[in-house]
Image 1: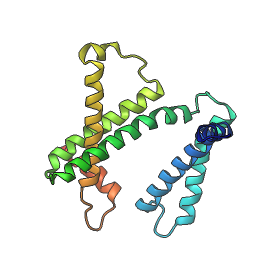
Image 2: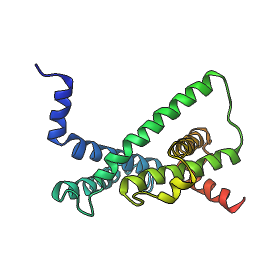
Image 3: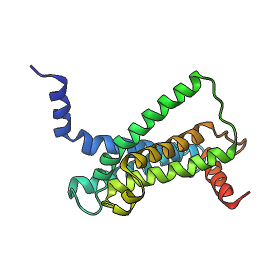
Length: 189
């Protein structure tokens, strides 16, 4: 009798986790950014599809041809995404609890600080998955493992809160407005 766990193992052996899922993720993210930013102009869906396809294939082909080579980023993606997903689920639970009690978030300075802290947390997670800092002993001397985990979670929660609660300016694009707002925050405007 075949159970669901055997089915998942069969899909893994077929390359779902190493080829199909990373391709779909990269393709979808690049396509969504190109569509939303209208970088190539309005109504250029066909160009956006081609560029997204090329970038998605550029990510998975090095993994298929030479697994573990220096151009192979699939192991980094597969290692970092579960941690990011865990933080995203935890953040959604926090938002549900905050919404349950009717708390409203106001003030751009708080959201800017949360955005900066969350960006640093995502950088730390992906940097750790990429092996940029194998075992930073100096960091463990300053903080314990539990403290670092809590700080990273708070940073990511802040970034997500900032993206959800920031309002889109009329006549502008959401991505460019967010980047400009972050730049203005650091410039002190």
